[in-house]
Length: 437
Ligand code: NAD
Image (cartoon, rainbow, N blue to C red; front, side, top):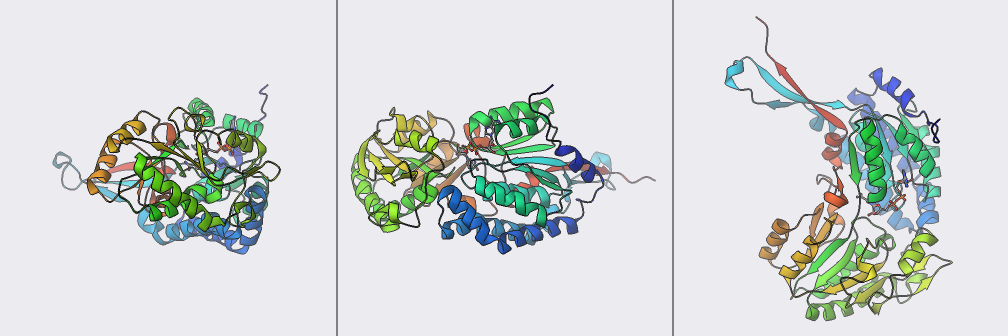
């Protein structure tokens, strides 16, 4: 007998999918509207849960999770008819001029969404928006490391959505392992690459396609001669959001020694402008998710010269927004994705060295650059590979609803958001029609 008895979640959803009830546009828009109502009517409950799990301020909870998802729903409701329209394809003359060809979006069936803890509402609900909009049933598995948000989702989703089409399964490794033994038509996983490999191997047994939204060390190149005050303000806001626990957070800075000196001073000021002289007392600054991650991060704090921050409080899972200067490329903080509020600055000779530095490492989820030079932007685009790119502003590219969000190489495969979610959660069915007679 399997050590992980099946949750049996997929089978009833598959039976429901086969009735065809999830296919009409009206069902899909009805589900999206209900999901929107769940968020607007229970925003305060979600905000409280996110504060309990991650110390997120109410403003941040709304901005990065609740309102973010509402905007994704609104954008989808506005454009869904257009996105689902069959698309004509040219037909070669040898098939005759009465023949026509087109593609339609076919829902896949029953999809599994496995979410992480860092944006535990957004990263479960935004994929669900796409899955429902594309006409699928879904099993969703919130992260056990954000238990308050997981409980809120498990309580509220069945009250608002069609319970025959959406099932919430709470739990950790045993529950997820059991789920992965069932057959799904797509698995959408957000989290780390180690588990990503487990998910993909399990999916292979059923020939199930996967989307893997993973992470990695997203670099930031700061060019000589840029306005370091602006750079520091935008960099600090992107880095220290959610106490650095953001998949697209700037991981480390590459810049020349002269710019590094100026940037260090500007970053110290920018952190103070955001969170005051004592960030521990700021309601706007988050906490580390658990003591395991706290201990992992605290061990990285002496990887370089302290520019600002460095303070910790284990009981409160607090790590100050920290900037480290003169960091060695081989130091511990440069060996793994930081995923916390520590920003190392690594000095390089210039653009060529920065490009080589990036290319020697795994392909990141995002690459950022602050530069006035168009040539430098063009070179970075042409000579590096990453899931996405942000020039002049980190993190925000994922809030542009028509941009695909996803990684490449070690940072993942596949993408979503807006119409890209429809592509991910549908099969593009090819149709040829040659009239009889
Ligand atoms: P996590 O520990 O919450 O894990 C994610 C999910 O995997 C959870 O639902 C968990 O239950 C499940 N899981 C954990 N171990 C498992 C196992 N052995 N078998 C099956 N399922 C298992 O989250 P995490 O991985 O710590 O998240 C952080 C990582 O996620 C970072 O690398 C970050 O960059 C990445 N991330 C990526 C994105 C993105 O959109 N690309 C977004 C957020 C986070």
